[in-house]
Image 1 (cartoon, helix red, strand yellow):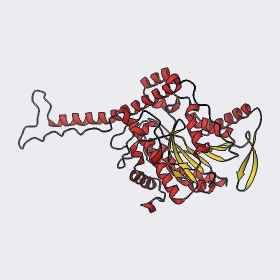
Image 2 (tube, one colour):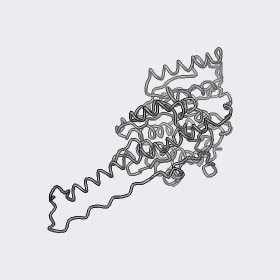
Image 3 (cartoon, helix red, strand yellow):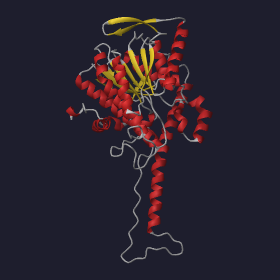
Image 4 (cartoon, helix red, strand yellow):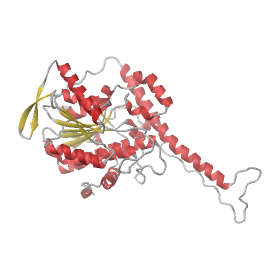
Amino acid sequence: MPRSERQSVRAVQPVTAAALSLPLGVGSAAAPRPPSPGAETHTHRGAPGPRPRAEGREAAMSLLSRALPALRLYCIGLAVALHQLLRRLRPGGAPAPVFPTQNGNVAIVTGGAKGIGYHTVKHLARLGMHVIIAGNDESEGQEAVRKIKEETVNEKGGVSVFLFSLGNVLVPLDIGMCLLEFLHCDLASMKSIRQFVQQFRAKNCPLHVLVNNAGVMLVPERKTEDGFEEHFGLNYLGHFLLTNLLLETLKQSGTRSHNARVITVASATHYVGRLHLNDLQSRCSYSPHGAYAQSKLALVLFTYRLQHLITSDGNHVTANVVDPGVVNTELYKNVCWATKVVKWMTAWLFFKTPEEGASTSIYAAVSPELEGVGGIYLYNEQRTKSTDVSYDEELQRRLWTESCKMTRISDVGSRDL
């Protein structure tokens, strides 16, 4: 029976947004005093009148509203990078965990063709999982399948055979033949997500692990196919819809002794994220940094709400959220040139490799220690505390309800209001 341990998690990270004392709000500037009746409003000797002063304040406030999210995000990123460096410099270190063979259990990994997702897929395949890569680039996905099969077979020194559970029948499968496959799924398109789910269901196979890994970071202001701001639409709403459409299959696949698992990849930026329920699409004032942090906070809130609903229904599924840390991947392609230069010079020291970044996702997917444990935040394979606002059950519920409206699915959580 899944159990939520949100109230008993222990913080293992010394650095959080609160510890950094980061500014989390912008004060309101005083409005200019209106002129008295009959007063002159034109300017003399070039002095600005009331309207130019007001426009100047508005411009300053607009600039500040864009700069503060960037400052918060880079501060938390720097704090995590420094923590990673200190951890790396510690003598010794914990040995690599050994996980049990998965005997053909089925997993879906979004964004599994590169970066953290690629290494997540590779390690799950090594354990004998039938892994489906969900991505929006066919050639990239097929190349990832080819490379992982080749690397896995070479590392094992030959062909390995596992038992794939299809209903009540155990079928031997060859790691080099069919334990890996790619299916097209564009998370920026609700239509594509629904088509992917239909294709998966047509296989009539179970689903034991769903890894919501794909994402974009700091993209310029633009919309998804369905008109959503891209960070919120792809990072959050795409995974929200995918998980809900696959939830029934997950419930049917989980058992009392072996729960199905939903793993969602967030990041430490959620500590400085702000959820604007009245402006989830960032229409009022767009900041790529603020939009990215909001999407990651939304993923944490979604995970906790999902676990609450699963537990209420008594299903054998767990939902957890993981933080990979600061990882050297292609996600940084949209940062400014100065940041790219700094990253190029320091990534080898401060950043995790994509394989290191995947370790917590893999742990959450297969570790026996997490059997039946849901509703927790994991960093470096350890339970830690997410930002305080993420435990606000009313906020979780309101976001869930609004997300159901946006994705046009029934609000299964409304019955427990």
